[in-house]
Length: 163
Image (cartoon, rainbow, N blue to C red):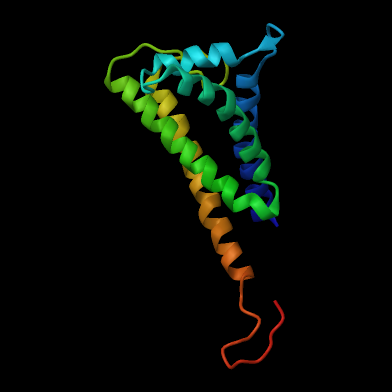
């Protein structure tokens, strides 16, 4: 019972992190306006994308992917896909932060909207490492649970078994 509560708390924290980050990139609550223009600038500071149109597309759609992936962690049918999406996104975020740090860029992370202006790269990378560990945990756990539920209808001896 305690294990289930801990797993639910960890799943909720991971989901909330992505929902919260996505929503803050969609809408700037402090100023009552869309946050997409600020997120475009945050993405441009990384100097990783070759085309401005790609930057705008990323700024428009990435926050929605984060929100839906966060919500998806609670929907049984898409839970594994959500964990895979969060794992992949977090790996990309870590790569982008590490790249900016190695190139000596002073950037506004953009991870949680315009109000987060930290360029403390070690702290940001540690935070993302913990998020990645949680995402990998659920990716592996949900993949195992899915494999256990996908037993064949016929057992090893060819007899019908209930799932």
